[in-house]
Image (cartoon, rainbow, N blue to C red; front, side):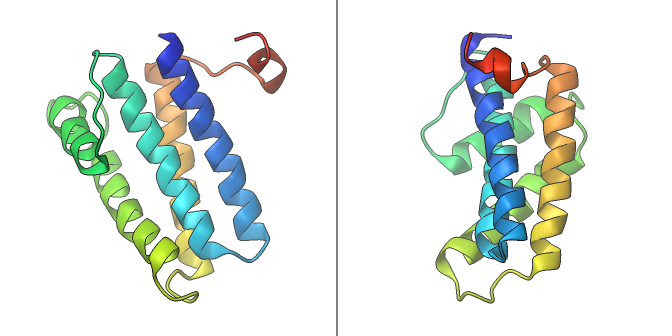
Length: 135
């Protein structure tokens, strides 16, 4: 795992924690947005492992699909999860307060957990919080 991949996976882990807190606090739209970022950072980490970086979210999502989903390197549903999470992120960030139901945010968080767990299996484990200070 490269240092950049580690940083992205740490961002993903932190975003997952934030998503849980936001949902528990009654902010499902913002929770769904953070869950999207978990998946987005994971996709970036996979791409970083091949020396690829993109400035647009759409480019990251497309490249992740082409490089990792299409050849079967990661489960197909991860790409669908990422696309659906992106749509909910837009609804949560820019739509009305009621645009994302708590159940939808909860599902996004569960999906984000599975994507991050797969990344840890395929890219490498994320150090515990105490070890973060030494990275």
